[in-house]
Length: 285
Image (cartoon, helix red, strand yellow):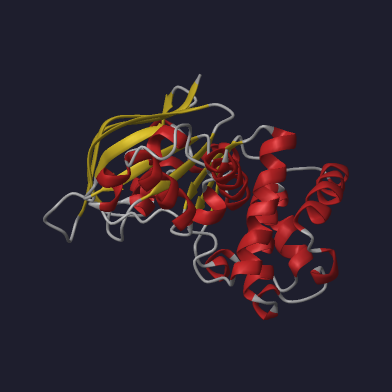
């Protein structure tokens, strides 16, 4: 079942001449982890905001076509209804903080959707260990580190158990260790909850191993969509559109193109190292 379905969707902001999104046709299936990539200005954030109803509810512009979430047009939902279904984590975590302590921040969204005290406690017992924010609960969310802010923002959204989780460049301001911590949480969600997760991200090293599907946005259009491994087999196409996959994938693509390697492209550094060892051993025989 397609939980999210864009049908000939166009969005143009009031103050611009060119649409941010042009004729988008895209389906996102239930339980899939989807990576959305593309250069700056490609329309990625506009796409995210169109899924959770921020567009058109909080932005002025011209909208054509349709965006369906769970088979229903987003414009036909009340904003509070859509919030329960689609949770979004912004690139700047502070922009979504409203409370004076981390605990109050995580509880705030659950109170807003009318959960009982027992339900809130049960979800806290799940989401706090998952995101490793237990030592932060009494601290102001504005005063913890960047990586901790990202995990607090993620916990606040996860606690409301949305059926669709959208993350708009959640690691854009983080160091490599903090990036990995955020993606470790997403990996656990994928494995244990089979959640539908949509991640917009420039840092591909952590995204690629988790993604079932990849979408390339370029100049407001869907330029390419495919399962992750065949997506990156179209390397020349990606490079011409300012997408630069990790070095290990590019290395094996060049081997594949030159006839020195046959098989699937490795999607992680560990996979690349293992296949390189196998390849070198085969050459020695």
